[in-house]
Length: 372
Image 1: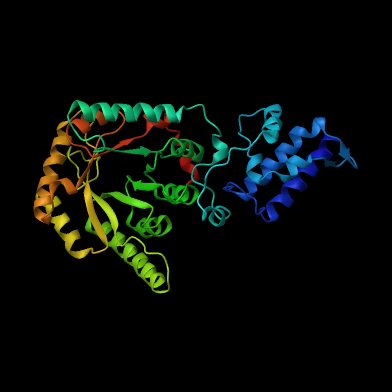
Image 2 (image 1 turned 90 degrees about the horizontal axis):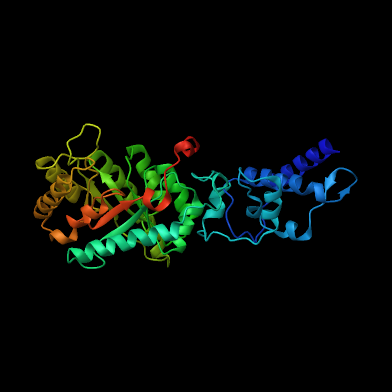
């Protein structure tokens, strides 16, 4: 009988994999096959307490049959009993973007929700702690309350943790990997603003811009070569042309430029990316301003050497030089510097955007990288 039930569950999974998703779907399932396997698991887990028709097909309750496929996503660590209870529990759907359902069927999300369902990480509490520290630091140094933006670095983190941060009011998220950023942007709500903060290969520039979109891609913070700038400018230009054509047909007006930060290697370390401070950086800023009309230089970014706060001071000096070259007000250029271990020191020295990850989301799990 057990073998027959296994075969029945497999048939149910196969049917679920090939059938269209119901129109009442409240959350996107990254992989139809994942959902199908989860349905089969739920059926098997409940088979011990269910009657069997014809000794081959497990009976599913009416409530279970009407639940969206996302309801059957079972964490790998759950016991059969817990899985059965989860299938009967009320759903707490993620608030996803309207475009996510079409893309999810063809490509798994970068961070699978099944890898870490509802986590024990107290996201809201952690966010409040970071915000309180930012506010206290600004106050202690007589800086305006809103003069430092918090970018929550969510690389390698599953969507449910980002959703928890979103529910706690966070809107700016930072990602290091192009594929992960693109996938998450399609899953998360449209009012999230994405900061790309990792190394970006020039062949990934156009896909990143076009899949995330100019409205949602707030900034590419790691521009340090004309090659990358040209690739981004070309992709943004194509997006603008498409938007203008749509506007001519009564479409909605779209953002016209892509924001970028110039990444500066303020520590001089060979392991760090970025333009060299001084003439090289100034020349790069001048060339981008002149030759890339679809890019907007919105600031400068550095990583710096751990514990060497002079790197922050160097970026402040770089901003003054770039502003002078471009004929801009110094305050019109952001300073993206400071991470979990030193963001308060960065704010003290002039940071207007800090990138905080592990303090909010906990230690990173790089085992997900193989899925990208």
